[in-house]
Image (tube, rainbow, N blue to C red; front, top):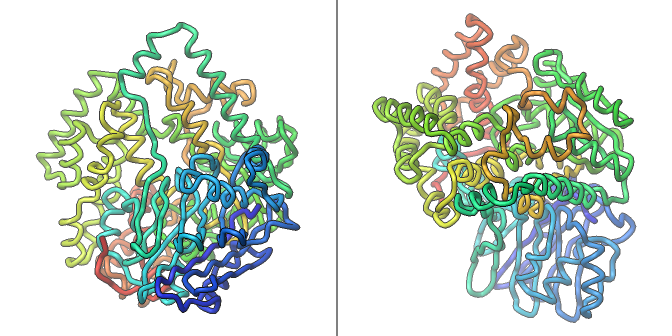
Length: 636
């Protein structure tokens, strides 16, 4: 199919649109799809669809937009629809045969057969837009977890939607900061339908959009649905062989998710670290076809996972490439990474990911598998382990309540007090965000933005929207759900834009909704056994892992802190010495410079503690300069 492509669409209710209206946006999106372009305008001028293609499946065919003349429909898609061969056969059997050999067309044919219900049949990482000439309606959708982005904005009575914000700006949408959205990011994460750009929204994961004569509406077609505590208890106290059966189901589910993502008419690469998730994926993928592994390497041995990855690759007989990164590499590509991602970075791992994909693309690979999602599915992050303890241990709950009382006495902000009132606990990742980001940020803020931050509550709206999905669930599953609706699509999956900048599509087997349906059924004691985190995953694929990976502790992917390298710190100083910081609407230049002046005198540990703050200052300054951002009225 198409791989990590670029899509652009316009809906003009009164007509008058033309292909020329998306020419600038198509140029911006070309790095996402260097293998071909296509543009179509409806005869009545009410719709324009554009596509830049990365050819991964059926490279000689499946050019887009894909159309069906009798129904006057056209479709452009970004991403992959998996298991498409089976669906193509089923469509042909029901009188809706596909003309191409790729996977994109199944979305069009399913829509013509089932309407909006077609989304139930689609499996994968995708965003697409479809013009229905019969209904005179634009239909657009985004995958369940939000792996693929889809942004939209209105300008002069027209709706614009695209794979990247830069494409919307190229169509004339104004580049303005949304201060309330950035305040929400500091507190928790961006709201599911907002961006850092005022007036530019994102279609939330698991949702579709309709635009027609009746206006623009957004509808949900899928949501995470964790079992209630009663349902989990029934499994836990049921058959004594339940755990064995669950492990077999997880293994089979992972096998299927990987197998489907190995379907490609081009070579497939894999991200490989020293951890369980990527090691399990590479081992599983190697059982289906030849793969090549890539690992980022740092000079700091405490953060460098390449030796473990090399031993894993050697055991599997998989070709392995080590991408050695130096502080000079980070300095050179810091601004480009932020511009490509269209979002703030909080650790230098964004630059590492950007260069990782550059190296994969430079070796001729267009698609790769990666291990994001393993920690969300199997509660691998330390914060989730703390929430798991709250769910299972009365002593842990008592200790937490004592900590909550102290936090309230010290003046906890309203957004945390609201969460505590509604849930009876604070998700550990949310508490950590307060202590690691929000509280330390306050001395650096401009007074006018500090006021915006004080009156912002990013948590209450999400809690209100999530009542049904949170009710009756354990603290762990409530925490996992809120994380998946906020931090996951808005930060972790933001790496998609960094990969796309180099024409590389990254496929994520752990974010397979069928695998999620299997994994979520695990009772709480199964998440950790005998002191081993992510027990279910380790046990399900134990024979595919080396001993050092199987028994190794959880290691997050972190690049060496920028603030601990004098050369990188000089780059930061250079950025903060110019107009980028002067025009930054969030941070006070004098306060930032005092922090930067003090850092070289501090021990390494104290310097590292300021990494997130410095990254946030640099990222917002670079975005301000790169896009000519002004301060606009927040929307929504």
